[in-house]
Length: 192
Image 1 (cartoon, one colour):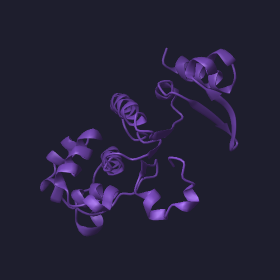
Image 2 (cartoon, helix red, strand yellow):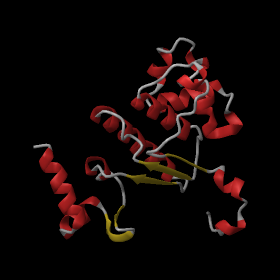
Image 3 (cartoon, one colour):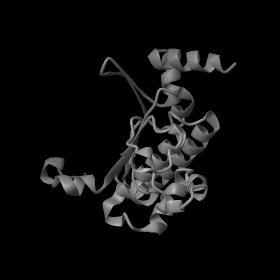
């Protein structure tokens, strides 16, 4: 990182500049503020930052509709409110967006439970945030099987059976006529 071998960094130092949201996210059965704030433990009580993260994840409306707002207990285990899977995913996204300036952001199918319009809106937001963060040397890794969103990335790496089989821009991979082009065109046909 910035010319320093990762083995020379303490694990907590490296973890402090990394964040992400995974497809199999946690449904933290805590009050909303803690569920989101856990994405940056040093700011777990910073309600301004928590609200900003919720807004960036499209989750502010969810919280506004809850009986006690950020203090609402989530999940049935402790007698709280049970959210839909898509609402839980937005809470998880907000948790992953708590850090203001991560150097590594990993998004592994971060919108799998969302409808197509919500997914598109969030990917537009991710693209904007990524453009802003690359100026400071940050990297965003997006893992997706949905080619309608992958095409907007700078560099695409196609994996098959755990190996890199192709890489390049969307245009380069289409022109190459390999696996990416086949899969992209197959998905595109479903929308015609």
